[in-house]
Image (cartoon, rainbow, N blue to C red):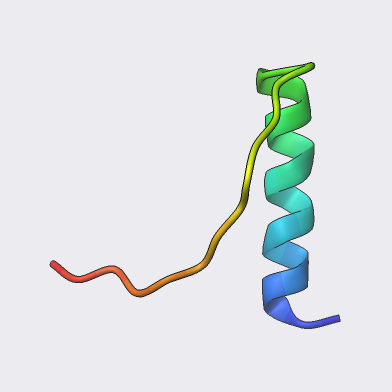
Length: 33
């Protein structure tokens, strides 16, 4: 698995616990400071 797959899976687990029953969309992008 790629690192992005691992991060996505962890994010999905966290969102299921924190916001059960809500829909969500996980996206990746560049953060500029």
